[in-house]
Image (cartoon, rainbow, N blue to C red; front, side, top):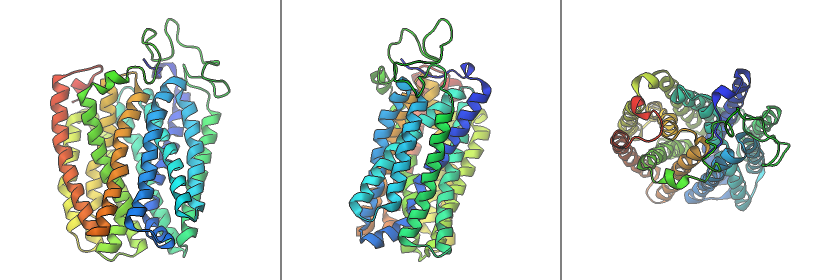
Length: 433
């Protein structure tokens, strides 16, 4: 069904170079996931926006990311991951430059949409690439990849806080911060063009039917079943009939609702609820993503021994138990305990995606695209919901509804454990549960 990549077909040095490039891409989109949060108050004041309008900018980025995921995942399986990553880099470059320069709401909204499309294509395809290149210890590899994402996510608010401390504000701070992400996107594009194609994938200098690297003798494109037909969307109906994948997608949606809501609204919440200044709020937000990065690193060290489903249960329960303490705090220092919720929740993302890849081996691009598209609904809709409540009853009320989502996530992980035990499909998930 799909032109996956077999790690055994890729020379070690070539695989390592591609993984480093994936790290660069994930660092870039990590920055883009959080850079707007500490800038939001300034943009809102500059353009005279309501909370709901500011939330619409965030929603535009993440709705467009769903398109990037749904198109990019199957396209990566059909035309090659290298090609999709190059296009993703171009969209990120154009979108970041546009957000940094736009002075009107309509132009800013369009730039966020372009940025989101590149974000989604980069996110899903980069995940699929690393998943293919690390079939043993997949959850550990994907959690390491997401440590890099988290490093970028914490670097962005730290950068913005330093810009504020240096006296930059308003449009100048926004142009500087997004200018950095545009340069990183350009560097990623250059690296993608320099690398040779992966086994079974077309050269960038040829069309989809052009010259390909030779497949291994006796079979079709690397990692594919010669009798399975075309890769990509073929077989999606089969995937959609798997209830476990729906549960995994909903778990990811709940996790992303937490990360996106904190990343985009926590700085504004601290300003509104506890009187924090912009620099302090940026530093607290940085602390959250430090917690996320450390949590993913810790998960990568224990998940293969503890088991995928046990890890998910522990992390979901920990996040749900710890978020209320941050919401009930009355000082910036107390609200900084949100970092503990981030630490516990962090490994949910990579571990869930690894579990899906184990369940349906050989469909990395399509699986990543489908699950991440579901997850993107959390980052598209929940920040908008928090902005809606913020205009009416305050941002704290919006974040309290997020606690209900986390409690639901704990129940969903329990249902997933039962589903995996009762309906084994595809790969080796049973022994890793």
